[in-house]
Image (cartoon, rainbow, N blue to C red; front, side):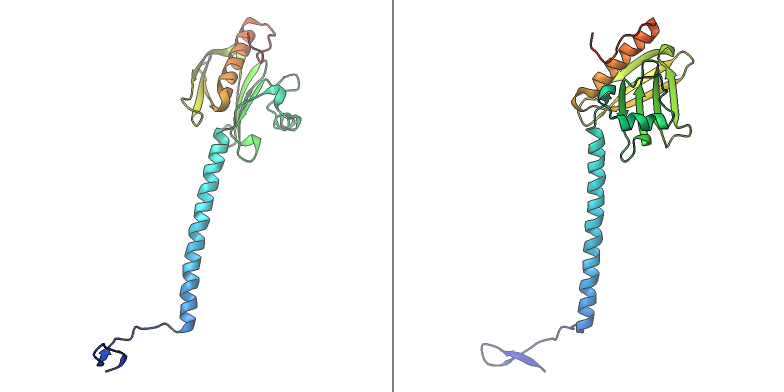
Length: 194
């Protein structure tokens, strides 16, 4: 019987030796633990980045046409979505990396929705062909506002907007004024309040 420590009364105390890994195996074990920790941290970082991007999109309000940079307007023209004689009145984009991923805008004549993921990426309707625009406003800044648009030919479109800082309400009001002006045949500026 092996003993390593004497008992208080001086007699040897039996012990069972625990198995030890050779030095090489210890490093291999720590390497595996390190890899698992690294993978977990990477997954958490990716999830965090995804949440950040989602919040960044939710916080991006629609933009009046006068505030849209010229390079963005040129990109929309290059995609064939904006005609030369049209003036961009309001723009809303859900695109995380490129504007053409998902956007909606309207001009003095048309409402245009574009999404690369759709079977037909672009839907455009003349404002004077619209019968109704029904808003469903978000209850908080972290929710979406939907504008349900119905056209004379039965076409139904939904414009989804981020609701930060009341940009959704301004987009809706401007679209409503442009629609009313198009139906009346006038050239009212829908970006200005009544």
